[in-house]
Length: 478
Image (cartoon, rainbow, N blue to C red; front, side, top):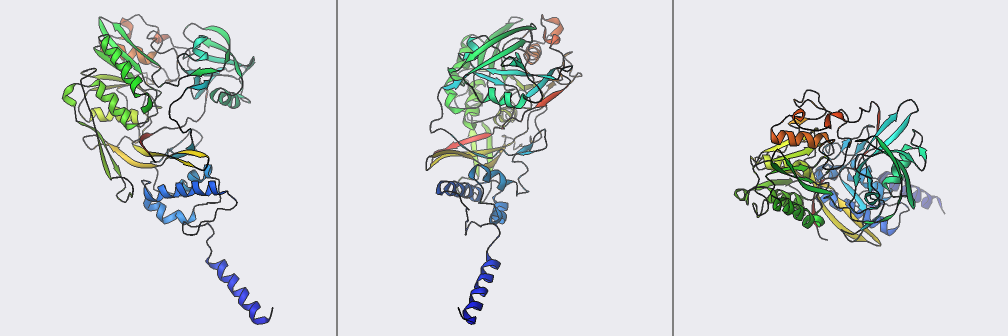
């Protein structure tokens, strides 16, 4: 190569080096060694961030710096961490880590099906039950009906003290918690203690098929000649709407005059399900009233900026004058929307428990199959407001009766609330249910036969396992 062509080649290389960005931009994507499936998923993530994300203005400013060399499973979180205006998209966990509400995850092509597992779910607070030996305990939060755990007598509130015939310690608690939650292994050998009786028992749980229903318990409780409907609802999942409405209809058929809605484990879900739930509870006079409206970014290229959600066919199942809601820091998004939406219509809602999570934003959810991967993608795309235009519950909703406070006026409290103490419907040992019933009947807890004041001892030291956040969701077909 002669001197002239060598100089021309060097100049060309310098020009390329000076003009190529350190990170690929949307106009010049550079995906490193990823396969075409990964590249297509990242394109899908980018498209909705640019066109629909509530903070899409900042996405437009910074998208050329997003690191598209990452695998798609990490790409969304990594990109969102580069933004500064999206503080409402997520929260900081107990370890100070930023957790986002927006998500993309692999999912099945169907929405509702039986699952196979043990049928047990754990509370995310890990209690130190034996300080002298530093032994931990896992508290059972959920036992699904007709699951292996239910059939062998495990109930909500039981404490797992041993796993596979050995104690739970600081060295193994995370792995064992994960093993139970993820249904690892062919069976579970557990030793448990029932908090309400202090009795200990052992079980070996096989795997089996069951339904992960969000309506694990409903009944009518008669106290002081008052019939009180009690419904536990753990997720606003639209595929279970018929089951939800059937449970409310059964409560109505049994003559319920009052109603307790237990949302203490409910992290949110479908707006449509929230509307159906509220419509099933309130009188006919609320028909067509706006439960909530949502506002998207004015530059959103896919959805209308404003959408209204109105109550429909009210008064056809129950026609209540008020409801009590049991809540906790795990009550979020659609759970908070029910409370604030009804209050926006001046419908009386009495809140009992602890301050809710505080999530007034939501997602337009799409499902798409790319290659052999079926994805559910839910970026934050809107903010919620009730009929009075109020939407400022980002710091959580303060309960009327705070069960964590000794000065709540009831004479009872539990510093570890909402740590489960007893099974659903056990008004003798479940402090939240006992207080809700006392508040409805106008009787103090001491005037009723209850052991809610004799809760298990306060756990002075606990560990936290981060719980995945849910969100207010509107589903769209693709």
